[in-house]
Amino acid sequence: MKTEKTRFTIGRERTCDIPIADDSVSRLHAELSLLEGGKLFLTDCHSSNGTLLLRDGQSRRVAQEVVQPTDHIQFGSVVLSMSDILASIVTLSPAAGRMAPKADTTPPAGARVRRCECGAIKPEGKRCPACGI
Image (cartoon, rainbow, N blue to C red; front, side):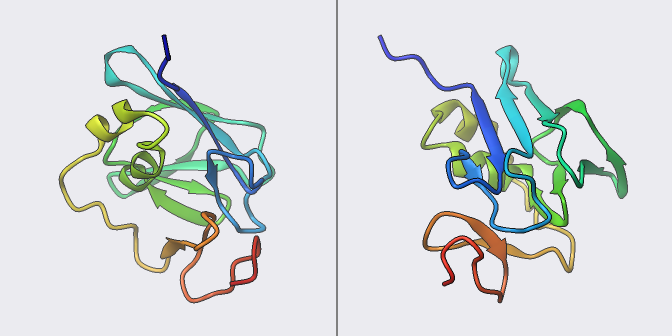
């Protein structure tokens, strides 16, 4: 019997479930857990530059927090929407796809990132530090 993955690593290390190719992101920056009842639990893994929750125009540093699919999270200087994070882990856990919001959750202006061909997330318009593309 195959069990569904419920814990996902986020960081600069290529082995993370959600790799982010940016020097402001720690190798193992944070961890996202899918809990019973569809809750999302984010834990900062003692990152150098911190993890910020961006919600309702406010930002605050978090160590552990229940997050919403409509939130944005800042890892170092990289901002990602929770819907993008959930979309990137849906292949690892189909339950993540059921949590993604249907509304537009475009990241705040000036925080554009995209997924590189190598799978890492990089700042839009810049070379990927992971592979150089």
